[in-house]
Every structure is written in C-alpha cells, then in structure tokens.
Length: 263
Ligand code: MF3
Ligand code: CO
Ligand code: CO
Image (tube, rainbow, N blue to C red; front, side, top):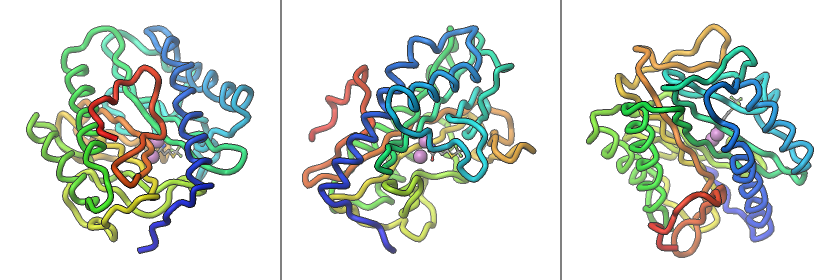
C-alpha cells in the first residue's frame, strides 16, 4: 500500500518531534511515584508540552479523547484516561503514553512502563515487554519485513507464557499521528503485514503483552481498553526511522541504554 518514505527535511522534523516526546518523559520520570494522581501526571505533561516545548499533545481531542496523555494502570491495556481521583499506589504498574505534535506538524509517539513500589509479577511483565520492543527494534533494517518483527515479539512473549494483544497495533507516523502501515505485534493478517522495510520509513512498535488471554474489551467511556480476563498487561513504545544500515530510535531517552543496537 502507500507507505511514505520521508524526505531528508521531514526526517529532520521527525527527529525534533521524537526528541521532544523523549524530553517529556525525562521531565516526568521523577514525579511518577506512589501518591501522585494520573490527572496530575497528565497536567504536568500537558503544561510542559505546551509551555516549554511550544508543541501540542496530540491525543487531546483526537477523535474526542479528553486528555493530553494516556495512563493505563494494571489491567488497562491502553488509552486509559488520566483522572485526578486516580492515585498511584505501591504494587501498581502503569503505562504512560505521550505523543507530541510539533508546531511544524510532525509527531513523536512513545510510551513506557512505571513499576510503583515492588511487584515481582509486574516487574517481570514490564521487563519482558520491553525486551519484545527491543528485540524487534534490533531487527529493523531495509529488506526486513514487518511480519519478521511481529514474529520476534510473539515468540518472546509466548516463551514467557504471555500473550500478545491483537486488537491494537503500531503504525506509520509523520505529519499524521497514525499513518500506514499497521504494525502488528503477532503473526496475523493486515494489509501491510508483509511490507518490506525501506530507508526513510517511520513507524512505531508498541507491543501490548498480557499475563492472561490476549482478548481485550473497551469500557463504556469509549476509550479505556482492558484485558477481558482482567489480567495484568504492559506496553512499551518507540517511534523509529529505518536508516540505510538499521534503525534510528527517534524517541530515545537519555536514561536508556540502546547500545545493543548496531547502528
Ligand atoms: N499514543 C497512542 C498510540 O500509541 C494513541 C493514543 S490515541 C488517544 O498510538 F486518543 F487515545 F490518545
Ligand atoms: Co503509537
Ligand atoms: Co503512543
């Protein structure tokens, strides 16, 4: 299908957008501890994106989404709505998903897990999910197919007796928040499931991995996606650029060790 190849000028704008998204995490990480509400996390991110970065939080009003970020706790798979009455407590795990749209119209989309206090199961799930992202990222280069990435993710998750969410996927990204292709995280059918990667493509990988069944349902607020069996779930996401030799992680954070990538 029509998967755009970014021009050098667009790639430069994607780098700015990706760096901005990463910088929001660098700002918020020290604040995410037991006792803070997801509404307060959202407010801090919103104000930083608007006032410090001069950009826009892309989720706000996106198809009617009411907040600037997504905060998804425990059995919430994705699209959790920040809430001033929802306070993080020890033993919780939370995904924070941030998408910045720069003033010149390009998107940087990333999410990461926070483990609050101690939870052995939560830590293991979060770690394995990050490994799913990292192992698939490490395979990105021209000539590789999206289905190769999907198989890497599914294999690693299932080797730990976890399941891969099928109802949500990664996506192309650029001037559009969600562009072609759909990036599946399991070996399944999509229009571009067999797309061969080429330098200049930008897309996200954002595996959602469940302790129980892969099935999800959306709550009556129309957004909050949960595991159908209420089992624990985790997600990590980066925005990537395919380069001539491999991958550039546009949303890389300063705290992150990506030395396993040969770039
Ligand atoms: N950032 C999410 C993604 O990774 C999308 C959030 S859309 C929203 O694609 F409307 F729920 F915010
Ligand atoms: Co995304
Ligand atoms: Co996202």
